[in-house]
Each structure stands twice: as structure tokens, then as C-alpha cells.
Image (cartoon, rainbow, N blue to C red; front, side, top):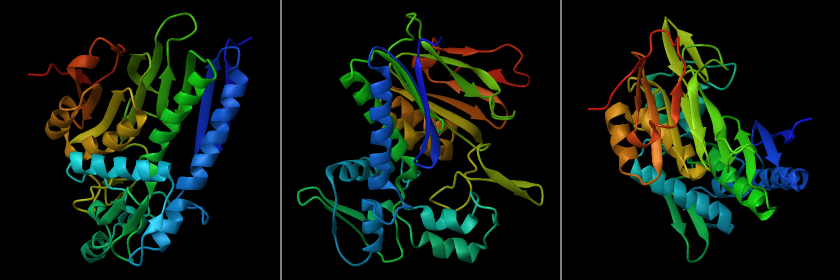
Length: 322
């Protein structure tokens, strides 16, 4: 018999897995599932009744009154966009739609198509009036999609709910966005696998020992297509409209809050090793792993003791920072 109560559900466009330990484990897991569905109803780009859809429908016209949670996530999204020089942008939707990488109709758009789609993006066009509790998009062609940050907010909320229910040990995975509460029941740290970016899913380079942390990874292996021997992946650079070409194939962020890790794992992938490392080192309580196309693994100083790389990772080299 497992010492955990385990639950799996589908929400926010992904499978959400929970492993919860404690007297109220089942109640806590059910409350978290309810919370995920509630947040989806507020923040989903695809639901006609969501607050985000109301904001998008009013684009270029008028301000929309929003609840405090959606406003909070919008504010954080703008903050992280500023922090990373626009490599994270919740208005990238028109460009992503053009490429169609998450559909059965992926294609390489023309330069003219990309230029036109980019004219309908730009996080700076989101105006937020926190005093009135409203937000507005500047142009009618613009839209917001919180998919790259909402799961992070949801993971943080899950941890709050576990704590409210007296849970001291739990694990939640929102489609690759992992967060753990406390140690495992036996007192040891959780061990979270780091995907080998050149092998099939589930093949790991190593594990991160984690206590009260979130682990979020972005990689060019998640979704892509190939044309004329060129690989086009799903992580689009909002500055160019093309898949990021930063020399990286995977980035992982480890921190205490998942909302920032969710946004910045994408941002540092686009920024590349040097600029990405500089950004992470400027943020308190945030660590990262960078893996380059040359299979070099770089790890920020504060994470070195918690990363255990497996033997036999052929071709990969653990690099010492200068």
C-alpha cells in the first residue's frame, strides 16, 4: 500500500499528477483539483466565459474589469517581460498560430507573414489599472494567452492549499511544471528527474534533490517539426518571430515560487547561456541548468550540490563556470 494518496486529472490543457501524504491527503488533493478547474475557468484562452477571453474580445476598444487573481498574473507577466527584455511575452499568440507547431498543420511562414503577425504582439500594449482593477489591450488584433505562466501560479496555489490542510509532504506535476512541499515522508529530499534532451521522454540526465522547490524545464524537444533537414521547435523568440536560436537545447529553473520559474525558463532559453546566466544570477533564490547544442551542461553555483548527474550520459560534458 502506497504511503501517498495519488490523483491524476486533466486540466489547463495538461495532465496534473498529485502525490500527497498526510491525514487529510485525499481532501487536500480534491481541493487542489477543484482549484485548478477554477483557475482554468478564469484564465483559459480557450474558454468563452473566461476573464482572459473577455479581455481579448475588448482589445482595441475598452478596459475590462478583472478579478484580483487575473490582474496579479497579468502584472507578474509584465514584470517578467520587462526583466528579460521581452523574451517572455504573453501576447505571442498570433505568431505561434502562424507556425502551427502544436497542430497537425505546422508550416514555415514567409517573412512577410511573420512581420505582420509580430505587429499584433507586444507586452507593452497591455495597460493595467490596478486602482480600478481593469486592463486593456491597445490594438484590436492583439490577444493575451496566459498558458506560459498560469500553470506556475496554479502550482503555487496548490502548495498553499496543501499547507492549509496540514499537509507537510506533497508533489504536484502540471504537465512538466513540478513543485514539491517539504521532504518525502521518510525525511529524504524529493528527487526530480532532468530530461535528457536528445533521448526519448523519460530518459534522464540526472536528478535534482529538492525540498520546498519548483522545477520547470523548457526544451526544443517538446514539440517541433522538420523541413528540408531543419528543425523548427515551439519556443518562439518574440523579438524575431522565429524559433529561438540561442545555442541551447534545454533550460531548467529551480526556485521557491513557480510563477516566476514558469515564465523565466522560456525566457532564458531564448536569451542563451551568457545572458540567461546573467539574468538568473541577478535574481534571489533562483537557480538554473543550461544545456547547449554541444551537449555542455552549465549549472548555477547554488544548485551544484543538489544536482546528481547519472553516469553514462554519452557525449555530455559537465562544465565548470569561469
